[in-house]
Amino acid sequence: MAAILKGIGAVDGTAVGKVKRYARELTERLNGYIAEDPAREAAKFLAALENASDQIGRISERARKARENSQLAIMEAHQAMLGDPVLKETVLGKIAGSLPAPKAVIEAAEEYANIFAAMDDDYLRERGADVLDIGNRIAGILLDVRDDALDGEPGIIYARDIPPSVLSDMAGDAAQGLILEHGSTTSHAVIIAKARGIPTVVGLSGDKLPEGALVAIDGTAGEVVVEPDEEDLRRFSDRIEAERQRRALDLAAAALPAVTTDGVRVQLAANIGTPRDIDRAVELGCEGVGLYRSEFLFMDRDSFPTEEEQFAAYRAVAEKCGEHLCIIRTLDVGGDKPLPHLDFGRESNPFLGWRAIRISLDHPEVFVAQLKAVLRAGAYGKVAVMLPMIISAAEIKKAREYLAYAAGELEREGKAFAGNIPLGIMVETPAAAVTAVRLAGECDFFSIGTNDLTQYTLAVDRGNQRVRGLYNHFHPAVLRLVNDVIGAAHDNGIWAGVCGEMAGDPLAAALLVGMGVDELSMNSTALPRVREKIRGISAAGAKELAAEALLLNDGEQIRAFLAETLGDHSERRE
Image 1 (cartoon, one colour):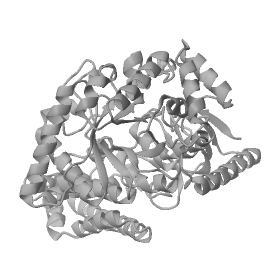
Image 2 (cartoon, one colour):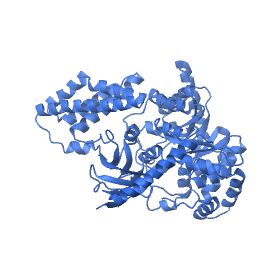
Image 3 (spheres, rainbow, N blue to C red):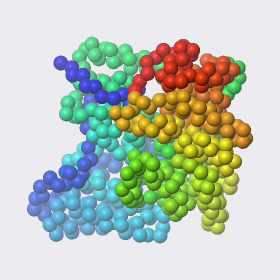
Image 4 (cartoon, rainbow, N blue to C red):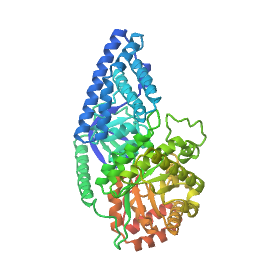
């Protein structure tokens, strides 16, 4: 008999498939590992080494067929390291000294990584992370940790949690759906899943989701049906077919511009977290990238990415954007985004603490490396740099000084770069919004980060289950700030965009058009609905709509007014 599990819908869509459990708790498994005699441990290590080589070979072949050249190059480098006789002898030596095989592998990999990290050459320093990856893969095999869930046949991936870097490296067809025990609708894994259109449910324990069980997942309702019966399968099959037809229509309309019935055009851009996200965004008709979350390059690793590593990632996206702009947000960590290799200390209120631009300005060596990478990518496309969490003109001026310094460094090094790229800021604090008219003179564009602006304005953490019902980007205070920021931008001759969940909400998009927004940047899956909404309204009508909405006193009242006026009575999903 089918069992229905109820979680939280995080990414819309439905799918049916078999459960593939992902787990990578190496430390926990290592503590419970029972070692045998050294000869037996050595044999297990050699078998694991061969197994790892087979895994890398399969991933390489998949990357080759998909023409994912960057991933193929990484996997080929990993394959070469697996065959390194010195690394192999080091591990065997540690086993002979009575270390259990998995611990010997981890120790050897860490020693090698430290050697690479101390090298002057950027390329060789990067190899340290590769060695750690290889060590973890071999140790995972020895400890029977299943991180090969993302290989082989597609399925519904279940995990207690999953690192964004692992998800970002996943082949495009590996996950039909995603079920996470931890995480929220705003977690980074979910952000990546949204960008790839993977139906996702969060907040579900895996107790009733055994490996290989057939499940049907509804990412909109947050529902998972375990061992669905014939009626369930028929119901989900109908919905999957309807979604397939909807996607076909979306693709057919992707080339249409987002232009109102009276001729006002709004640029629709995409929010992305990794270079791989841009392909789907382009397919759905994005006009550039409005928000490249560079922090994904910095997470789930043991050191900062090098300038070369960042340059390769930024260049790949800039080239795919073609004639359109790729806006790269500088490092935005802190709050709910820690870095394992950066000591944040203990903060009572990390969301109000040391984060985003504050970290970059306190670590110029990290900031300048990133700015140099962005400038170099500008030689291969149109790029802009965007500063997060700005609260003062002094921060923008200081960042400009570092940008000029980075350009000077590149000139001295003789590297190709774009000499004069736009510098903008995210308006995501009430301080920046209220003083927008003063900040506008210091930058080239505004991008209103409505997720954080709403949180900080309403003092509501949208990831907190107890108060998330108070989070509402239609709150009058938020709308008035957004309207004022757009006005301040235009009064000072710069353009204003909006990114975040609000930009991808068709009702809000119509309202923002009425406020005069120039660009909307959103998860790629939202592009078709927003494009359709904009093409169905007039700019003049939207302006009247915005004026009337701004007179209302309650967020829910404003939402209802927009839904009634725009003829959208779809249910709101929380």
